[in-house]
Image (cartoon, rainbow, N blue to C red):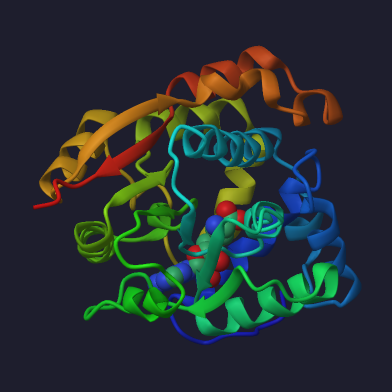
Length: 290
Ligand SMILES: C[S@@+](CC[C@H](N)C(=O)[O-])C[C@H]1O[C@@H](n2cnc3c(N)ncnc32)[C@H](O)[C@@H]1O
């Protein structure tokens, strides 16, 4: 893979291209268009295993988490969204077609610049779709960069998928502190599938040897282990969230099994996917606002 970045976190950005490739095998709006632009413009040169390896369970998980977040979002009447570590996610592109929603995509500087250029090529500029460089772990918090776009006194929906899973405990705590601060001043909710446990991950690795290969590629790229950086059990993940000051409501990822287009596109055995999703949840986290 071509080397684009240097910092420790920037190495995680390379995995955004891997999950974007997985989303090509789904019906998620704009997913194919974004992945095609990345390939056409050779933004990143993927070596053979990174480009060709498809893990059916990675694709199913990536599609499920995207759709499960959307399903939970629909339960809230919140018109301003702050998405952390957006990578090549197409959600902002899709949701900002509603002019009543303010959508702020954030990521590390190089990644968010790249994303903004791709989005502009696809749909041009939109007054309600913004791009900010925010390191989600930074203390003091960089989240306040978004205050210009956000309406004070209105709640905010914070999203993130596939970031916490790469971070160590101290880094996760920093993200939690930044989110807590934000929710304490605006109100709202943090929706994320990133509180995952190693036990369910190990089960998926057994069920799909290609996932094992892809995760190994990911670890080689990032220098970080997905297995070591996640929680031993789901109970430990819950406990961690409580200790960081959040109330948690869990939504099973099984709720979106009927929406998964990749099952048919890739000919995936629904039972294996059901087993994986049964062990995974999207957390909706809130704080008590004084
Ligand atoms: C696995 S990718 C997921 C991207 C996207 N959320 C998705 O689901 O396709 C991880 C993302 O985290 C971003 N990232 C890594 N470290 C970060 C940090 N400290 N703050 C914000 N974003 C970060 C990377 O640039 C990359 O886009």
